Structures are given as C-alpha cells and as structure tokens.
Length: 475
Image (cartoon, rainbow, N blue to C red):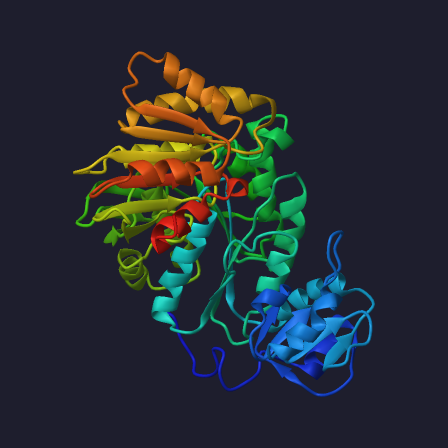
C-alpha cells in the first residue's frame, strides 16, 4: 500500500506563486499573483491559469494575451511587457523548460516515463488510474498526448509539489528527441510498451526505432527501473541499452520466461480479459475492461511499473477493471442513427501504424454483430519508402477481420484497395476516398441498426470528425 499524506491536490495551496515562478524561470514578476494551472494554448486557458506566450514559426502567444486575461488567466510568462500580471523573461520557450526542471526538482513523487511505438497513451492513462486508486488526488499525469518538446515540460510544470506519483508520456519521430525529454522527466521507472515501424520513414530500419525508443533509459535516476517487452524481437537490443543505465530491468510479456507474464488469459464479460499473471513470483488475478491481446500486454507492463514504485497491485487490478475507453484510442460508444436505430462506433481515430492496425483488426474480428461490420481505415503516415509494402500487407488483416464494408481513406490507401480488389478471398464491399468528409458521406448512407463501425487512421486525416459527426447526429 502507498503511504498517502494529506494536503493539496489542486485546492488550498496554489500550484505556483509569482515569486516561485520568477525564481524558477529567471524572470521578473510585475506584481504578486498565484496560479493553479499552466497552459500554452490560449483556447485552453481557465480561471487561475498561467499562460506561456510561446513564439513559433506560425504564431506568437503574445497576440492572445488580452483574451487570456479576459478568460480569467491569472498571469503570463512573456518576453515583452504585458498589461496584466506577468513574469518577464528573455525567452518563453526556455522559461517553460526551466519551470519543468524546477517542478521536477521540488517533488518527492515517484516518476514513471512511458514510450513505445504503440500503446503509450493508453498505458499512461491506465497507470494514472492504477496509482490514483491508492492515493486519490495525489497522482499526476500528462494530459492528452502532450508528449513532445513542448508537451512534456508543460506536463511537468503542472505537477503539484506534493504529488505521490507522476506519469509522463514521451514520444519521438527522430533519433535524439527522447534523450532530451527523459533528462527533463528523470523517471524512477522507464517503460517501453512495444517497438513497431511507426515513423520508419525517418529511420534506416526498425532497429533504429528501437535505439531511439531506448533513449528513455538515459534519464533514469540512480537505482531506477527499466521495463521492457520480453516478446519483442528487439528485446536483447533494448535490454543491452537499459543495462548501460541501470541494473534493475523487468521484462513483461506472454512468455513464461518474462519477469511479469500472463499465465492464463480468458475472455471477460463485456469484452475485456480475465488475466492470471505472475509478477516477479507473485500470482495475481485481475480483469482488464479494454479488449484485445495488446491490452493484456499493456497491463503486464503497468503491473511491473506499479510494483517497481511500491504501489498497490490489488488496487491497480481494480482500476484496470474499471477503465473507460479513451477518445481516439478505442473508446466505444452507442450512437443514435438519424435513420432510426442504434449502432456501435469504435473510435481509434487518433493514430495508426502497421502493428496497431493489425492488433485492432484482430480484435475487431472477434466482435459479435447482429448487423454489418463496417470499417473506415485511414492511411498510415511516416512510413517512407516502405509505405506501399505496409499498406498492401494491410489487406490481409482486413480480410482476416471478416468485415462487410471497408471505406479506405487517403492517397496511400490506394495500394490497400488494389490488393483487396485482386484478392479472391475478399467478399467485402470496398471503396476508396480522399478525405474524412467523403468517408462520412459514404458511411452515413449505409450504417444501420445494430451495425458496428470501426474507425482507425493517422491523426492527420481528421477521422475524429467522422466520429463526432455520427455521435452528434450532424451528418
């Protein structure tokens, strides 16, 4: 059990005072003020928040200061004087990094960093639920997918000083990016969920991706723990990199040789899984609300991390049983159709790569459906010269899912469509469209009572708008 203490989790004491901010970022406050949150997007400012007026190639946060103060922003970090409460610095981007460092330095929280080609956000959210279950209000995590050079320091700067746990997602699409992020986070536990050919267009090969993901271990604190996937073909590569920074390495997977492994997995009511696992010699039985083998793998990594930070494994198991789906990453919702009746939409619209497509379609194949099984699948981005190969290979996964209708979205999906049309075993109705709006038009004409619709694709295609339109009835 974790030892929780009393105090603030966003209530009595401010997140930062103006004097603390000024000291942390090396700036000068024009007046005294307190803040309870931090943001860099003026559209997300709430009452009592601190606004970082960042300057980018396309925008300048200083242009939005008037709206920030009107929205209730308590102060801003600026590099030119403002009319409202502010801390003046020479470089607001550098100041955000400095505030992240100060936040990390002032906390005694156990910190967990999460990366991987697939499963980062789901694992981060589930870890948060697992640890918050035993210390309610004392766990902190990065929100949304704030996992880059701006999102990570923002998430760190939002962490209350008396947090018991902090969980931070870290992403990359080029070598060297994780190295800088993990030095900010300085995790006690660093997790790699899986290695897949996501962003492979920016690497020579998948081994390069594995090396880039393994940069997360560079930031481990002394005595920290690396959590790595035993079943990955890159296991030895990851283990060798982890061993350069720690002696504490925990493997997870389905093989009984893994330190944390599944002994038995059976279907659970509601579509999830009932798992019996060995966690470094201890047996534990728990339920995962989310469906799919990939979620069992995520859960094993989660249990390894919870044990490594001294969390409550039983509480973690209860939290996994109560998980709700994440928008864009597997959330299921029943929608009322304009034509009458109801249908199920499975929202995987945020991201797609060859491994996550395969896993999602494999799970979709197990769905029981009284109506039609329809899929809207968007192109997979950043695959470089291998894009045609991966999109053609996707045809086999679609056929195995035994769907009735397939709507393919995006230029590169032309390769998938051609392969499906040439496949003698494909009985599905196939169409290929250029955009999310065209996909919405097509699916609106065919979706009917008791159908199940899976929507998955890379975020740049905007397939979330299809989900939102169907859910709101505005189509």
